[in-house]
Length: 92
Image (cartoon, rainbow, N blue to C red):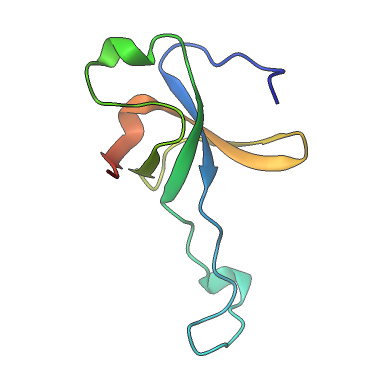
């Protein structure tokens, strides 16, 4: 999947899977499923480190703004490309 270069302060994120069933096993219709706001950083742009010592790096689990990013498909897999400033929280 190295057929792209992220520019500026953008990050490529693999979103957490959407739950299609409730805890009780009821299958949820697409309209009631909420978009996950959590994901894992897959790649970072060359200027991300200029933002400061926030430990934004590949492999980190993050929480991001609900309106952040653009959905893209790379190698038949869905990802989200967003600006690093849309990251709200980095999990330890």
